[in-house]
Image (cartoon, rainbow, N blue to C red; front, side):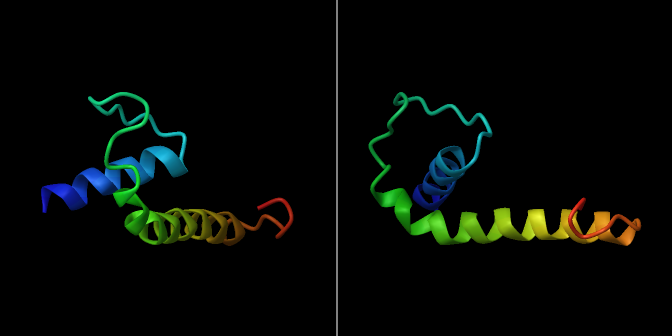
Length: 66
């Protein structure tokens, strides 16, 4: 379970600009293994952005501005 969480943190740090320091340095040794979490992290990022866009559209902003 701990490996999955480490892989999730590594994938979030790589695919976003969120600062998630890793004790092993800028390229952790589990980076290759963390690729298994890329689809999950990508889906979470896409869902968050989609919900934000829907919320802006709900306030009355046009689609292009949202």
